[in-house]
Length: 204
Image (cartoon, rainbow, N blue to C red; front, side):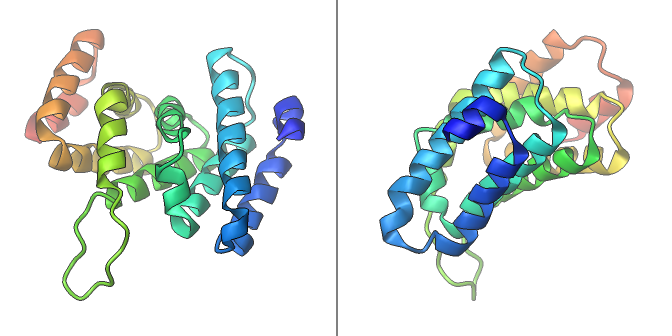
């Protein structure tokens, strides 16, 4: 953690990603992985808030790491005090222009929303983190919706815009009433949104 705090090196993040894949099933390591998640998340958040230069590779590796937490030890992620901050960081980077980190951010958000889905017939039961996700979305969803709309209104590649539309649609499916309010507030803050975006939002 100390080395990452000093260097913001993507290699540090990559090491944690690999460790999560290999050792996350070891209960004795859970406290360590919780500390790593909090430490790395706090450092990235500080960098974002202070306007520090963050290399695209760091963003890419950071969200790759978060996706590994989501896949291999989701309880550590969703029950962590860092989870709300994680969503704030995702909201910030959802409009990043570089293709590789943008894909990782969108992958992560898509996978988060999948955790709100009920288990389909024939699927193995899984841990339900809907309560944790709902609480964070309630507090940070407004900013996420505004950032999604900004991303849709930007010159991002069309494939990213399609995925942003899917994320918005999924959010609206699960949180229809608040998302409608957040959308209206966002549009009042972004009066020059292009007609294509406006048409998409109106069609939902």
